[in-house]
Length: 280
Length: 315
Ligand SMILES: Nc1ncnc2c1ncn2[C@@H]1O[C@H](COP(=O)(O)OP(=O)(O)OP(=O)(O)O)[C@@H](O)[C@H]1O
Ligand SMILES: [Mg+2]
Image (cartoon, rainbow over all chains, first blue to last red; front, side, top):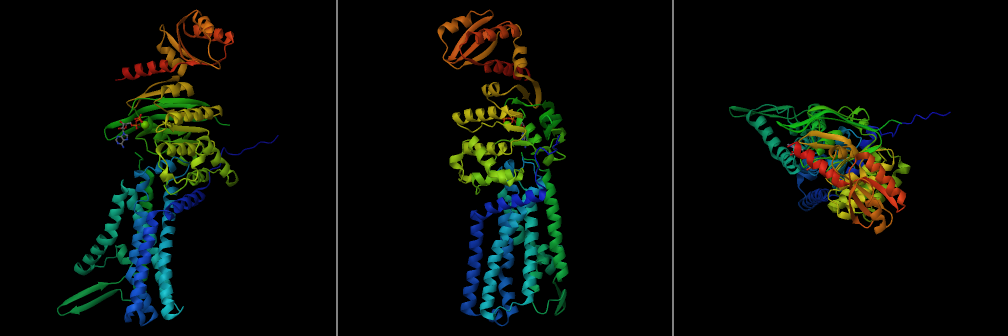
């Protein structure tokens, strides 16, 4: 006699469910109007930069390869990362509640944390597509003026940008898991990244003369700083007559730590909140 | 094989001081269909949401096949298909893609996935719209896709919250047929509904809820007859052929029969007295007549009376 002991139905492991959710969520993202709007914004910024640099040939851009990448990249990359984070993460979780798409997914044998992570992965990949487009245009322009000899600092800056994107999406997902309405969570994250954080940073560092080590935007400055030669000093004091004025630049390791910490804390909190929230 | 079971233990859900569900204790076990009835706001959806992990109970436990949904939702729902309210589906996915996603999540092997999806789509008669984007579906079409999603992977337990809501009359009839078809397999179905005729036709047992409290849970027969002790009881008989007037006369003359109402040429409502004995005698009589009897069951008006009385009493 043969005894079969097959479980009723083997539900896939969470990792494989995560892949499934990310795959379909990404399909949904890549077909959304939002994705095309963001891509268009990125292409417009890239096009403007290309045209302005080609026409005016500003010396800051064209004196050295590092100067080129520093100016080009420094001008737009953080905005593109922030916009991606807001577009793809701003209502990722709140939308599940508000639009009731959660009722379709959550009643399945899948952990909520898997859904959260799958959606996060999809938002990350969609953002990478936009970010990648900007990177390609940047490098193409750099190659046109200076050949394919890309300074190694640009590689670092690229890696820090990806880390910044990861932490931005961590934060936007966290906010989207708090709010009930998608448009409010989008608005809150937009205000936070575009106004509140930069403003706080300048208040803290310029007025209070304190190091804003607790701000993600401060940590993210390593993206631009690494393209400066030499790397700016951590603490810079300038004597202006009788007042000393201090500015701060996050060292690379501090910057990495700040961004990683934002991501880890927000991801953990966001998952816990999503896991406990009622669909009602 | 394990017997499918759904269990609520002291299930309570309160919003501030208002309790949408109070100490619901209910155990459903075995292959059958249980109707879940109650007025608007009674707490039906609330109970089903707790059972599917959409909300957390304030107190109590929800178990599916003995597994606590709050503790291990993934395991508890592994053999469970659910449709709660009217979910939206990711708008840019096609009907087929949305269902493929569900099939993949639920572990339908990749070789069988496409067939499983096509089968579910044809069960809800959505073949024509299989490539349409979900964002463009009408509410009724979306509800069909949602039902298809619940059917995928042949779950042993189904939790359905007004599955035919938002559908046109034909759609409602189709859903009724689908759910009836689901019953044939060894499966436990727990379905909330406002359509008493649907419940009478499909369900074996009924749970009635009002103000978050369970008023009754019993078989359809016992519920309806408990109420009509001494009173007339109503049953509905269906036939495969039109009934002749001779046959009608013959049925009417059976002992205990109080009245006949031919609602359609092939559907007869009988009222009679004498409880189960009379019912048995009348059924035997009609079957013996050879007039094409194909079904004999308590009529929905009996359920309606029971329902109205129970719900009124609880006010
Ligand atoms: N988030 C919430 N906050 C406060 N009250 C709520 C919330 N969700 C539901 N309720 C209340 O809980 C009660 C039960 O609601 P529920 O949706 O379970 O009823 P129902 O039996 O499904 O009704 P219907 O037949 O109309 O679908 C209602 O009075 C409703 O107002
Ligand atoms: Mg309801």
